[in-house]
Length: 166
Image (cartoon, rainbow, N blue to C red; front, top):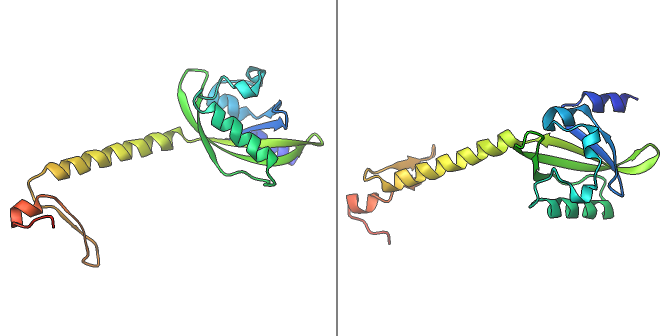
């Protein structure tokens, strides 16, 4: 009873499926994050229309391998998901083998990591722009670590100081 109350109150999305991939339980956070209700999951999960099509074979293989393994908990799986409003979301899932209604089942605990993915992508783009800018400058730029080790020198060092790259 306490376990069920915990699932109902969790902000993480929780799905429970039997080993034939029939959906047995979906907590309220699923509707909050995706717009889909438990009734919207009445389909063959092997052809899951909500998982981004390019990710579906990887997700299905991951689940099948986990079920066949001796492991009780999976590693994290990241995949794309399309919510009710047509937005592409990134999810990170961890699977565990449990007993649900006295039968073996798989529990999926799913977090929406879309914000993290977008922030990481923005950081990479910013780093690429910074690197491109620094490489194009004619000024000499040197980055020195706290111990005095030179971590980076811009390519302009060679023509400015008369050195060669050798």
